[in-house]
Every structure is written in structure tokens, then in C-alpha cells.
Image (cartoon, rainbow, N blue to C red; front, side, top):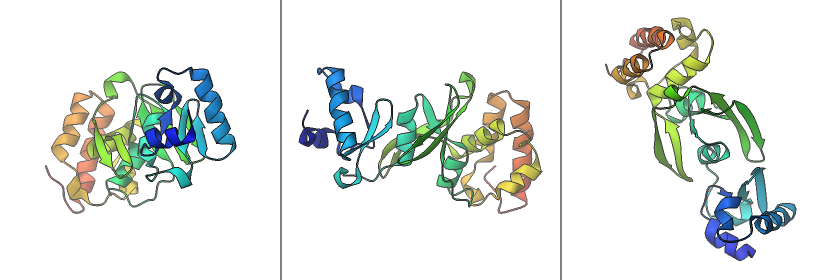
Amino acid sequence: MKFDELLEVAGGLPYFTTGFLAGGQDPRKVRLQLNRWVKDGRVIWLRKGVYVLAAPYRKIVIEPFCVANGLKRPSYVSNQSALAWYGLIPEYVPAVTSVTTGRPQTVQTPVGRYLYRHVKKSFFRGYARLDLPGGQAFVATAEKALLDLVYLTPGADTPEYIRQLRLQNLDRLNGGLLCGWAEELKSDKLMRACMGIIEVIREGEGMEL
């Protein structure tokens, strides 16, 4: 494969993989060519088999949520990353946190830091494929992102913890969906948290119930 051919097939992608490029070609030759392009600065290696084009050659801006999906499958963006994207918490979130049924890990790449938190298969739900400026990515709904954060954080099922989150734009949360998820997931911790969330939000701007 020539570099012009790579630009044609991958220039508009948020990331690409060795398998995607190989097609009917010998994967070993594709990897060797990619390694040459990595060495000369035209391609950036993220992790085994996953790459992005260097800045001068990209047709789109790198979308961190898309990269997060691609670095580990199955996974979806959740927790503080999704909450910040929905405008529900004020803090800037430097790393992208995702939920996965695989092992937990941290992946440090030249284009960002990616955290993966493990949940059992019955909790791997409540996400959707969203159209983002740099591509499509699986992201938790606002309600599920909040419940994922509570579920994965020790002691998070108290009003005190919820207050520490400094939730904002509360009209974007649906109380019925929030408690519906907590009940469906059959978690006492999430049910306690749901009641605490509603209590805290009622003290603020209010929410759809």
C-alpha cells in the first residue's frame, strides 16, 4: 500500500486498524509498512493494531470518544466523561473513561489517556451510538452515565457524594429513567443513590419526574 492510498481510505476516519487495511493483503506486510510510516511521523501508533494519521494528513479532528471505542471493544464512554459531555458537571475531564465487560485498564496514547472500568454483562447497557464532529461513538445516556459512576465508586450512594458532583443543567436528567434503570439493574446501591439524586436535584433547579 502506498501512502496516498492510505490517505484515500483512512483520511476521514477517527482511527484505523491493521485488520481494516489488510483486506486481501498480507497483514505482516501491512504492519511493516505502517511501522515505517510511524517512524517517519506520518502515522501515530495508539496500541497494538490501532493507529491514527498524524495531524498534517487528517481530514477530521480526532474525536476522543471514537478513539476510546476503538482502543477497547466492547466499551462505551460513561462516568465523568459522558456527564461532562452532556453538560451535567462543570469539571474539565482530562481522561476519557469508558465502561467495558473486559478487564479494567489504563491506555496512555499520544492523543490522550483512556480509562476502562469493568462491569458485569448485565450492567453493560444504557448507551447509544451518537454522531459526533469526528465520527460516531457509543456513549452512555446521561442517566446511565450517572448510575455507572455511582456503581463504580465506593460510598457514592449518599446525598453527600451527589452534592460533591455539583450537578448542573438538571433539566437534562429524567428521574423516571434514572430510577427505572436502578430498578431494572436490581442494585440496592443504585436505588439508594437514585433517591439521593432526586433529593439533591429537588433542592436545585428541579428535574423531569
